[in-house]
Image 1 (cartoon, rainbow, N blue to C red):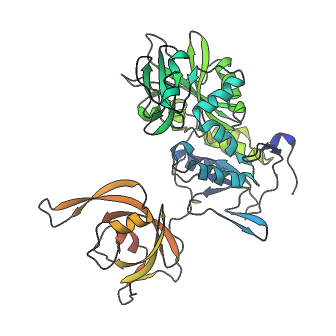
Image 2: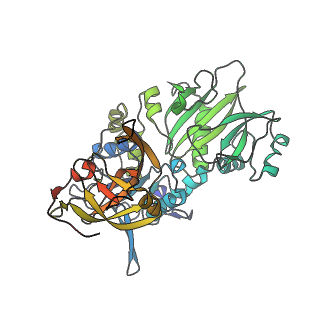
Image 3: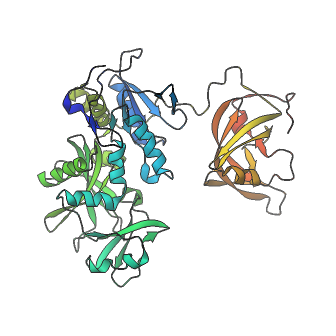
Length: 462
């Protein structure tokens, strides 16, 4: 393996030490580099980045829960899928297993160049911690206060002006934020999660707004002004904020602050939120996995090809500016061919019996049970007690099912569980019902059976 030039070095995972990135790409059928995107979700942005990698002549690899694994064998650590460079698109703020997700990114960072390395994402994840790093670097941020007990938190009025924004320390989309005054009782948590208060900045008599600057590497890809919806002060697009493109209008100061904030936190890609008060600019917060649908809507510029180019350049490659110009005017969010299938190729194992021995996995464990096949059932269902034993996932919705009650229907909760049938795993959204009066704790509906051939002569004992 040859090493890259010094300017292609990056932070090494969670350690912060510097190392050189390899410029040798894994050999593929076309000789292209394998560019991985670590993203278990189905966002338009993830799809657009993968599609941009393909158009630029390299092989995109979508790394998800369905296809990622690692093992230690004879002292050697292996990862699958193996890639030459990784784009970290984990939505850590929305994850219910943040440390686990960060460590997955760190596994790759131990051996692979990572765009938005996990340590930088960790630096940015906690909004108050990110603010302290920016302040220590001499960048302008609003005053803020953080405490972890009711006694310490009630001291915030001694340090901030009359009004403050009460925020989650880790959160996104402005959910549950509020403006509080010094005479209001405010605790250290919001919905049982840690919080902090930040100086509330606003220009009197002006509709609340801020500026989002999208940074990729050293480039400002675009900038937009986000206006709060009527009757609100929060500018988040997810809450109804309106956007307008202002890339050509923003001056040198917000551009400088956006670049420096991204560098201070060790990020490669960032959405930096800024406000101008009486002519002075402040950094409100920095987002490590900022979406760019709103940016594209406002400016007509997609960040996807810029992110793809940064990953390719991290390996010492190059991409023509003309290729980026051609791609940035569209946001191709079609499902890329590299998306791993939810169901493995079954080969000769595509037959299920009237009853089949399966494994079912939830948040608390895995159980072996016998399931009954029923082509008359639209959806798979599992017994209430079994759902409790395996810790079936959080409720993702409800479904109305015909019943013998007076109303004619009953409402059942829906949860995501993993089923292993004939050695192949798949994720199923199943309903929960009391099946204690029935022989089999799992009923396989058409949502599962459509992928198999059913042989009702095959049975297994409970």
